[in-house]
Length: 443
Image (cartoon, rainbow, N blue to C red; front, top):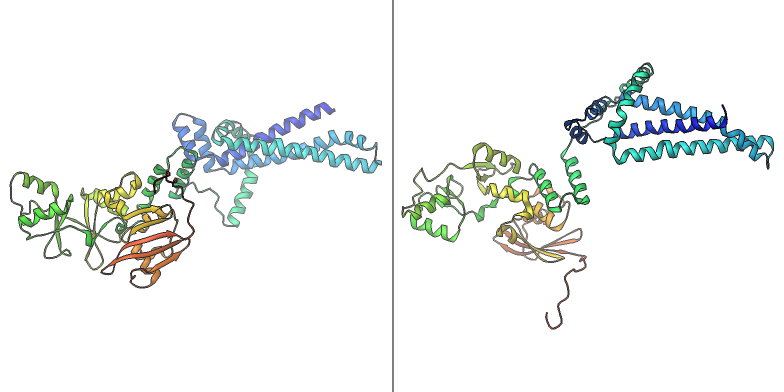
């Protein structure tokens, strides 16, 4: 074989090796969701790629047989074609034996470098830029190769299967999609500008519904406006005016004996029609949904769907009322900053870049979000900021008590009958202020 033929053969071997490198990396990197989308759009080759991903053993066996065979053949051809020329070149300065060794090493280095660059690195990086497109383009030739090399593929595949069984390893990749995978994709989409930061936060909040308990979104017991069954018309009217809500629990004797609830629309209708309001009227008082305080927001949402209600009373293990929750409370948790009630805004008040005033009953997830934190210590032991202070102090907090954690100081500002009303949260190492300076003459 002359020198020109050898160079052409080396070039052909590099191209062949590059093809198999693209085939290998594109199958491994192809996203199943994108392939499924391409298949649904009518690309039959995408369906073939999906089937190969389910059973990739024969595919990768062909890749390895071809790449190793091409590499060995390339070394043989390259050494035979280039070594004599480099040996003659080095004989100008070296002895025959030394020149032969130098010629062999030089040809080996050049051939190896060409294969590394053009048959491995470049095609693999090319395949990673658009793995799904590359995979559907090479699947046809690869299936032809699998058919042509079927005997060899069978032998090596059985050997590989035996090794997997010997070491008790999974032979198929796990393509299950988890919530963490989806959140990672949305975060990547936010960084790429595809999703707005608030939209990404809404998606993250949806997945939190199955981890956040209903206590984190409910209105606390001491903030519930309720009626007693025997309240007269005048008392009911005064309470509606003083505490205007859409729904009121109706109790027998005290708040821990809830018998139902009344909708403000029904009350207003009676007022407008100059009819007396009596909560002993069973037609006015509706059956109330009672849910345990250990349920997650996702479970409460499912119960709302099943009973076609949007209001529930929360009770603890001792059947005592601890709060109430509405469908709007759950949706506010999902939507976050996109929708907020005045009550939500009052719970976390940002004073400046480095300090916040936070109500003690604020859920710990909302505190983490406001402070841009990922976690707080012993999170499983409490659900509110007040609970965090109690767990950290190991007692009922008093005014001026403080907890320092990380770069934050949590200081109790107000306590009302053992209830923590306000907590001042400050950064110990403040961030530089971004507030513009006041114009001259103003302060």
